[in-house]
Every structure is written in structure tokens, then in C-alpha cells.
Length: 322
Ligand SMILES: Cc1cc2nc3c(=O)[nH]c(=O)nc-3n(C[C@H](O)[C@H](O)[C@H](O)COP(=O)(O)OP(=O)(O)OC[C@H]3O[C@@H](n4cnc5c(N)ncnc54)[C@H](O)[C@@H]3O)c2cc1C
Image (cartoon, rainbow, N blue to C red; front, side, top):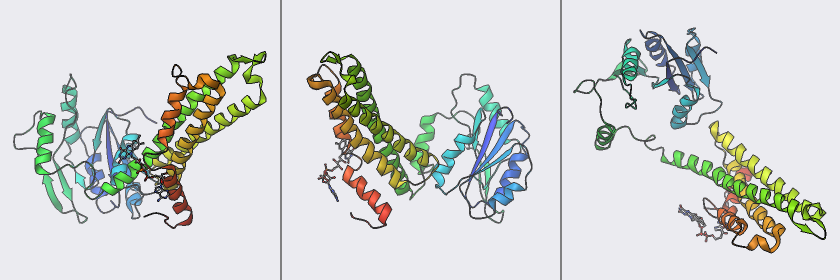
């Protein structure tokens, strides 16, 4: 792959076949040359891929997702593929003037103190028949620096530039739950790992009946179970998060991660107390604190029983709860 360009122009698209050709051409016609053009297709069922394939420019890259993840995620996904110093997000139906990038880069390069967070440009928004739906111009005051506070106030007053798509709250919230569940599972993994590490160290140093307790088979049995529970929890959480990273809606895997990892953390921290004997209960050591922390994790963001009902629903296709 060539060296990183100065600008990454990213076009997130879904069903963009009718408009994307003109948008691509408006980018490739830029007077400023040091850019890459990344098109991130959210699994469009139309001809978007074929339209993009007509362009042979080496600066153009086309990335197609395996499955549709929705607008918000697809826009965010652009960040993953961008390699440039500057990032320009361009909807697939927005046409920019040939000097757009040159002017925007000039403004950012002149900003030696890095006070600017973003620059914006005029653009023409087209419909599927190439008719201009609207032209976004520069503000009446012309170019210049606008403080973030003024931009935010203007957005709130005019009700524009919402965070997320209108009507999309359920989608965003569900995605947040899915990620939270695996995240809470990882809290459990953290507690279990610390309890396991402390237990291994204790088993090597605590001497009873003339030998370290780690030599006793039943103690090794406990350590083996603690380590297996901890590793299995970690893998389940990583699997759910990896799926979410790829935009896969993974109710089953996310609930498995949360239920298994938090219950495992309860077991492992309790076994660590057992392995430490009465010192495991002493407030001077963190073990009893870890066990209380782990005990809490099975309740929020859906109790273990609710996670089981979600897994069951995903397996059987029938809901056991309202
Ligand atoms: C540390 C912590 C942080 C929290 N943070 C928040 C927060 O930020 N926002 C918020 O809104 N809440 C929060 N909660 C509340 C949490 O979501 C609830 O405690 C949890 O959903 C359980 O509800 P409940 O306590 O009313 O128990 P109940 O709903 O009364 O449940 C009691 C028991 O019955 C089981 N049960 C209930 N319904 C069913 C069913 N249909 N089928 C099978 N079993 C069932 C449960 O699994 C549980 O074992 C938090 C809780 C904790 C412990």
C-alpha cells in the first residue's frame, strides 16, 4: 500500500448507485491531488459496487460490508479505513467544487496552533436524476473561524445536525446494550483474573503440612477450574465484541458473554477466598472486595436469568418474557 495521503475522503454509502458516480467524479476532479477516496458500502443490494468498479483511479478504494449495519455504524466505519492526516466525510449524493480540498487543506495547514476541529464546505446535493435538491453555501458572514459554542448553539436552535439519525434511537440503544453486556462481562474477567493471579501466588507460598498448598491436588483442581472459567469468559466477551465491531447484531453471543462471565467471576472470586482460607475474608486483602464487586455484576444490564431468556429466544425463536 502507498504512503498515507494527506486527506482521506470517505463516502459512506447504501443504495447509492444512482448518485455516487457524480460524487466520485467531483472528488477525482479536485485540483488538490494528495488524497485517497474510500467508499464504504453498507452491503447495498443495488448496483453501487458495479458503478464504483468503473473507476480505475489508484486513489480509490472500495470496501463492502458483509451485512448491513445501519447509517450510524457505516459512517463510523469510515474512520477505520481512513489513512490520511485529514478526514473528509462526504455523503454519496453531495457534489463538491474542484477547489474544495485545496481550500480546506489550506485552512487547516495555516492553523499552526491546531485550534480548528473541523472545516466545512459548500456543496450541491443531488437526487437520483442528478437534479440539485439544494445547495449548501457558506454562511452569510463568509469564511472565518466560528467558535464551537456558537456552532452548537446554532445547531440546537435550528434543530439540525442531530446526534444519530432521527427515529433511530431504538437501533442505537439496542447496539449500546449489546456492547454493554460484553463490557460488563469483561469487568467480571478482570476481577476473576486478579483473583486467579492472587491465588496462584498464594498457592506457591503458603505452606501447610510441610509443603506449599499448591502441591495438593485439590488446590490444583481449584486453580484449573478458576483459570478455565476466566479464559472461557474472556473468549466469549471477545467474540461478542468482535462481532459488534463487524456490525453483526449478536444478541445470543452478547447475552452468553454477560451471563457466563459475570457468573464465572462470582465463582472464581469465591474460590479465591476459599483457597486463601480465613485470610481471604480479611478486609486487609482485596479478595472479599473483589467477590462483592463480582456479586453485583450479575444484576445490572439484564440479570443472568434475563440473559438466559434472550439466549433461549434466539435459539427457539419464541419469547418467554414480555
Ligand atoms: C450496580 C447496579 C447498577 C445499576 N444501574 C442501573 C442503571 O443505571 N439504570 C437502571 O435503570 N437500573 C440500574 N440497575 C438496576 C438493575 O437493572 C436491576 O436491579 C435489575 O434489572 C433487576 O431488577 P430488580 O432489582 O427490580 O429485580 P427483579 O426484577 O425483581 O428480579 C428479581 C429476580 O427475579 C428474576 N426475574 C425477574 N423477571 C424475570 C423473568 N421474567 N423471568 C425470569 N426471572 C426473572 C431476576 O432475574 C432476579 O433474579 C442497577 C443495578 C445494580 C445492582
